[in-house]
Image (cartoon, rainbow, N blue to C red; front, top):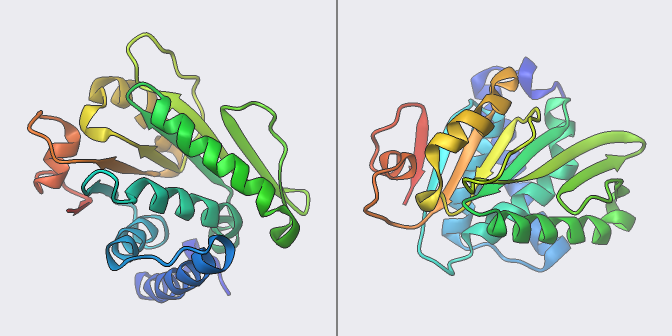
Length: 219
């Protein structure tokens, strides 16, 4: 099958439909998770942004609803399949206001890579707790980095094709814009914003209120 960059939009949408079906089966097969309808909707639009056309996605759903778990499942899936679909490794940044939620998500992914090693021949060759560097058959398939948006932190520049901002309703938009957004520039990468309803005026609220172009709000 030709790689995603060589396909038309209509052809990409067909690949998206097949990929979503594969992801649903994969979640059950590998982790015993049956996705709810709203989780499938989140997954559809996140995969759309990565495989069809680059748009930012804002996910506003109640706390404890599993939205972060859905995203981490998707990242685990993309560790294996993103390169097979696009021809390039997944280069993902995970950020949160103080770095704590990003750490929790990255720790969960790092443990999962070890569990997937036998079946999927994937190996994390990064011993730094803040990074996943996943290889299959001696080829780099994914790099995942952890970032903090706390005022006192400094984030080392990386090249990303996906940025995930958790607790986006509390995030420092200026710091994200100055330090993390430029990491997406060379790849035309996308950002997934995850948060809950808020009254604070911020990029996340503007997106979920439908005020931002080239974005999709899931509420």
